[in-house]
Length: 618
Ligand SMILES: *[C@@H]1O[C@H](CO)[C@@H](O)[C@H](O)[C@H]1NC(C)=O
Ligand SMILES: *[C@@H]1O[C@H](CO)[C@@H](O)[C@H](O)[C@H]1NC(C)=O
Ligand SMILES: *[C@@H]1O[C@H](CO)[C@@H](O)[C@H](O)[C@H]1NC(C)=O
Ligand SMILES: *[C@@H]1O[C@H](CO)[C@@H](O)[C@H](O)[C@H]1NC(C)=O
Ligand SMILES: *[C@@H]1O[C@H](CO)[C@@H](O)[C@H](O)[C@H]1NC(C)=O
Ligand SMILES: *[C@@H]1O[C@H](CO)[C@@H](O)[C@H](O)[C@H]1NC(C)=O
Ligand SMILES: *[C@@H]1O[C@H](CO)[C@@H](O)[C@H](O)[C@H]1NC(C)=O
Ligand SMILES: *[C@@H]1O[C@H](CO)[C@@H](O)[C@H](O)[C@H]1NC(C)=O
Ligand SMILES: *[C@@H]1O[C@H](CO)[C@@H](O)[C@H](O)[C@H]1NC(C)=O
Ligand SMILES: *[C@@H]1O[C@H](CO)[C@@H](O)[C@H](O)[C@H]1NC(C)=O
Image (cartoon, rainbow, N blue to C red; front, side, top):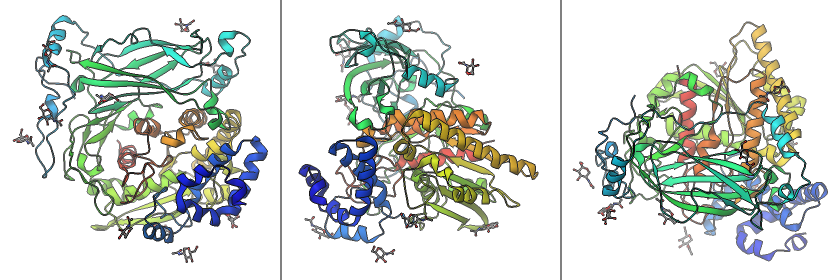
């Protein structure tokens, strides 16, 4: 059996002995997978190997701690690092004439040896900035860039995808783009604060414009202390619109990167690895110069802020320790735990998320919770999670990093537990989490179709049929759906069914005169690195996020949205902060997927705080 499959010896070289060891154990399962994949897809060996490799991602999580030992003993590369899971205002009040880089950020103290004061050496040449400043009259009333969920998203998406071809400009394939106002090789200089819009045109291999849309571009606008995903609007006719914006406090040097990941909706297909394009089309240096522009001040998120369906935020950096080393327990304690947030980008202790100074904010900014404030908010509550293994990680991270329960090394895929504050046992919270990747908690890749199982539906209903019911539900879905569903249409039917199921559950609660839980939709991650080409690639996950949210909203179920897709996107280009499909694997001082020791888990710790913001907002 192994001989027949291992047609690509390179795979095994890359995979290393650990894989071979696993292979023996998993052969039977893999064989089943192979038969299924081959019969539905008639795919190539390459596809099979890819399918197998991603299958393995999940399977390996179920291996118990012995795997750790074997790996350590053999000094092997740890490809899937966590094997614990068991059975399982005013923004800018600076003097506009002051041009020092990030003036409001330069006052941080040295909290510990090795912590450098924040400084951005990427800032533009001051004399140039001053010159531009005087020559530019810029509107004082600016807005933040924003995106909205398209009405009738599912039907419009299908309609665009199914637009008939028949003309060369429709049947050709995109290989290049032309961005009239950015191409040309000159240093691009733009004013910070303003939204700069650039039209670009998709071109085929002979340089002719395409006249259908649906290409999936990954965009990135990054500088030393700012990371964001610029918005791309698809007009459906081969023309796209790119919007760039940087806050004036972060003026300086940036790179705009544009990658064409998939052409014409091909990422939405059942077997995207066959179609992935993944070429970097642009890497353009851009200088954002400081202007008099003032953006509306960010406020700490209130309850009403969570009604925004799609976020268009950014990560900003407010501290940095270049000498930071991973500790024995796999943690990056780069700044002191009480290293403070910089207003208005967050409030509380920035050091607590162990991000070496990075923090996410969106149309509002987030409070970093202390253990005390988190317990105060959660006490006597019952939070119900329904989603994939990313929930498992986030819950553990919330317990470990925020709620001061470091000894909980893992939580299973399904559990119902009460946790108490070690410092004040009168404060406790009930957390229930039910995995929705499959109705059988040890299996995978069924996604929302897990609800076709009556036993699974009854299991879920049970938690909502007692005298008390959860006060909040946090829902996600996507990764398993990406593998399971053959088409957007099939996924949209399952999403509709899921919405009607939860609608019925909520109705029964209402009829019993109980308070109906608030439901937060937490969009799924932008899968990272190697996983960008697979069945749960970002193109498909973004579409699935939209379709499921659309259905839940139509059923009137959504009290709030947490856009984890936008939060993870700036970190999804490689595997430094994710193993492809998880951003919150437990800290571990071992080789990570990319061959480096350790991995950065802060993106998920940030999410834990954002969830608390949503749960506790007034
Ligand atoms: C781990 O797995 C091995 C073999 O699969 C088994 O013998 C052992 O009891 C398991 N240990 C735990 C702690 O589950
Ligand atoms: C393998 O690990 C052991 C124990 O951790 C260590 O003593 C040894 O030096 C390592 N060997 C290599 C080749 O890294
Ligand atoms: C950091 O800033 C403080 C106050 O501005 C200054 O006293 C200190 O020398 C600076 N430290 C470093 C490492 O630059
Ligand atoms: C910034 O530039 C100054 C002077 O050129 C240099 O001394 C300092 O080390 C640089 N800091 C960083 C973080 O690169
Ligand atoms: C800054 O710009 C001025 C004028 O363009 C130039 O003369 C000077 O050399 C530049 N300085 C640096 C450090 O680039
Ligand atoms: C959405 O679909 C409904 C029914 O198909 C239609 O009546 C409505 O006009 C559509 N709205 C938009 C904005 O396309
Ligand atoms: C595509 O549509 C947009 C918006 O309707 C329009 O501005 C643009 O000119 C169109 N592009 C082409 C090539 O027709
Ligand atoms: C822009 O990209 C270049 C090449 O990849 C890199 O050397 C440079 O540091 C980047 N600049 C910024 C501001 O990130
Ligand atoms: C958690 O606490 C609640 C209320 O105190 C109780 O009804 C429930 O049975 C407890 N659950 C577990 C798993 O202990
Ligand atoms: C769940 O799947 C496992 C195999 O992965 C199987 O052994 C078990 O019987 C299944 N459980 C149920 C309830 O069907």
